[in-house]
Amino acid sequence: MTFFADGNYMETINNINAGSTAHGVWMGSGNTYVYTFHVFTFDTQGNGNGRRIIRATLHMDGSDHFTGHASADVVDVAGKVTKNVFSVDTEATRMEVELP
Image (cartoon, rainbow, N blue to C red; front, top):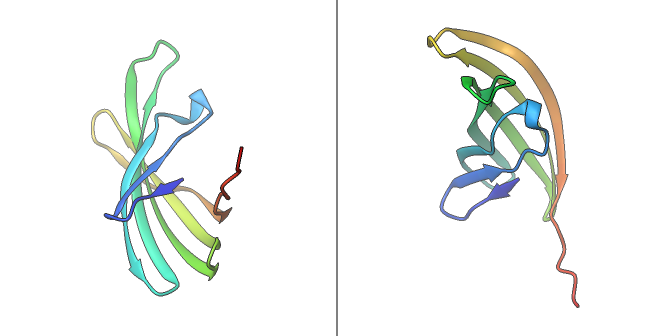
């Protein structure tokens, strides 16, 4: 998960069945933030078959750690939206620089 200072967001997904790299945006201030991102999905032949829209909130409980909650809608290639397909609690810790 990468939150850029200009309000953009990117997440690399390491599971081919989960979809593409995620792209989105974030906003907030203080200790509370919201972000939305899209993940494009593919069938076993590599053809696009839709996307997921994930909406999330997070709370900074320290300068390098957050907890939050996310939920997802699924959009098929015809544009049909299935709301709240899944939700998940999140937690992350900022990476530290490792000197050579």
